[in-house]
Length: 444
Image 1 (tube, rainbow, N blue to C red):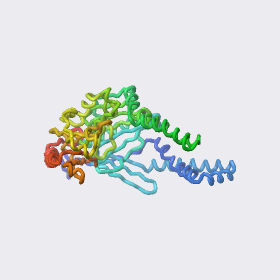
Image 2: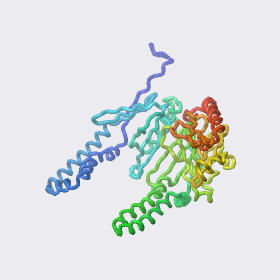
Image 3: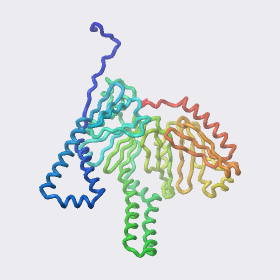
Image 4: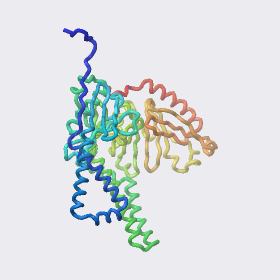
């Protein structure tokens, strides 16, 4: 029986419960006062050393106790005054000890919810939740939550963003994922060794020091230059290996999930319908093995790599899940610029090519390091034609395709008449593509 004065069609208002972050969070935030002291000492090390020498042991212990106490109090209070809550329409995050800040994140504007676990966080059993929101330049984050709580909150937010009712979002849970690709560590290591940037940095580390020795005859100058160059050659490859270790791509109803990292573990999601451009990169030394790298442009997201290295057929199968219905044209199907393009760009003009299918605009560039960009027609924001005086002389023009991620894909050195037709044709394909595009909603 309905209580008097209560409308049966009115849903009772859900009670909003504010929650705090994990109790380990104060230890993370307690470093702020310590960082201020370290920054002061680093700014004027001579004065800092003089001040320390004037202090007695007792005074030094008192100062240390005060700094540790202040750091602990700051960490505790910043944790105590930080709350978050999930309402019927948004995620609210309240932070700030002296200056209060409240972030209202509309759930329908969420386009990615990622979980990251730095090494120490993995040891402590906590995780950081990072939120990609449409139109926001900076990611909001909740650091730190318990690992199980972070996964449960991520599943709830994705379910709510997909349109599930607040009462059922808790019951949906994390959508199951089917593994599509796993990059073996040995294959990743070989790919990094065969990368041109690694060899370029190594060559610089071996060539520059002898020239400096001939010019200066100073051992310290040679060491000061050669050691950083050699370290950079190894660090760039080692850093990528650590970051891309155990790279796994899985398919789920809420998009493609990417897990990777040797020390810091990251769980990312490629938002469905938000991919603006897919690039297939093929370095020169990878061609014999048939390997490629797949990169992404995602509107408003930092996700930039889909596959660090994989055989071309496997990579194309993953691309088919990101761009349903799109096919990667064969190299022979790409139309090269006319031969007179060599007047504007000798030799390198042969690396350019384009193709237009029913679903994507395709442009290739590069001879040594080939890159093929695929832009869905529905994601094209604008199309432009440019033609400088020299190219106008040879009846050539460039067609620029701008995407929603703020990036541009260019068909270079096309015949002027062809470029004009491509300009008008692509504008029409983009209009009809947006009209027929699938929904961008999660789990649609």
